[in-house]
Image 1: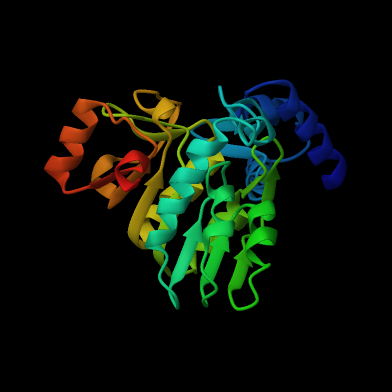
Image 2: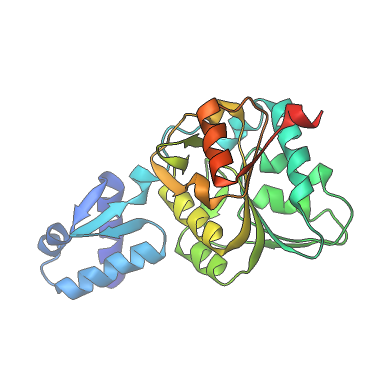
Length: 258
């Protein structure tokens, strides 16, 4: 039966990072290759695999790489993140559609938001609750698959939702930045979602603490040329500052605002 077959395929996907189409057709000889392809499409819609040439890659094995859980990151460098969040609020315009990324730095933003009407969209359930305490703002939370370590919503359902949302200003938080690889994260699904946000937004603001400069993770969601401003606690590496200046990207350091 279909449900039993898919449950067996799920067990295979949970045991190895890649499963070939040929392997699955040999494992289930009583069904056609087209049926197996539909099974793979089903798991992709569920956010459990990524279809690649010749088979599927299990999200379980590529979900996150070298990134601490958000519960740990929230307790680290809190004063620096608060300083960045305070500056980030300057980019919020009442009446505009604003996307706020998930992350330990963006979670510091709500206390600094003025009591005006904003329209927020976020992939972070906790951030959505904190934003909802405003009596006048509208808060939309993206639906989809919850990544437990990062506590962010991703997956095909989430990307489809964001494809239909207009975004004036996007405030994003990467896990690393380098001139060679741009702004990076450790989750493939999170990367794909951030790419859509960057493409949709009229203005892209990146919040990044200085420890993330000259650091690269596996998945690039945008380059320096895609952003309008970088907000950091500083200091910014000289080569990064020079590249930003050449591209017309504004850099704001918390120390400069004191």
